[in-house]
Image (cartoon, rainbow, N blue to C red; front, side, top):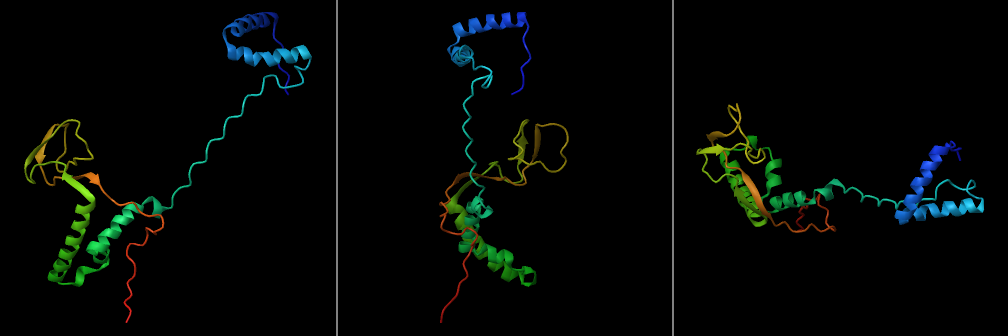
Length: 197
C-alpha cells in the first residue's frame, strides 16, 4: 500500500468539520466511516485498506452470440424461397435469356409475374407513396422525406418544388410473413427434385 501524504493541521480541521456534518446528515456516509473509526480504536487502521472494500459490480451479461447470416436474414431468404416456389423467379433470373426469342421470354415472364404477384399480394400490403398518376404535376414541399421522394432532373435551389411524377413509389403498410422454423435451413431456397421411375 502506498504511503498517503500527511495532512496539515488546517486540512485536518476542515476534514473534521466536514465529516462531523456529513455523519450527522447522511446515513450512508456514517455507515462508511464507522468501520474506519472502529479500526482506529482497535489499532488496526494501518494494517488494512485505507477505505472499506466496495462491493464488486455485478458482471455484465455476455451479449448473445451473433447469428449466422442465414439466420439473421432468414425472413428475406424465406421470401425468395416463396417467389421461387410460386413463380420460379430464381430459375428465371439464373437463365441466360439473351439467346431466346422475345415470344419465349414473354411467355416465361408471364408465368413468373403471375406467381410472384401472388406471393406479394399474400404476404405484403402495399400502397403508392404518392397517389397521383404518373405524368401528373406534383408538389414537393420543404422538409420532404428523401427516403419517400427522390428528385431527378435539374435539382437546383431549395424546396418547395413542383415536378412531373415519373413513378409513384411503393410503401409497405403490413407484413404477414410466416415465422421461419429454426429446424429448417433458410439457405435452401428450392429443394432438388428427383423423379423416381
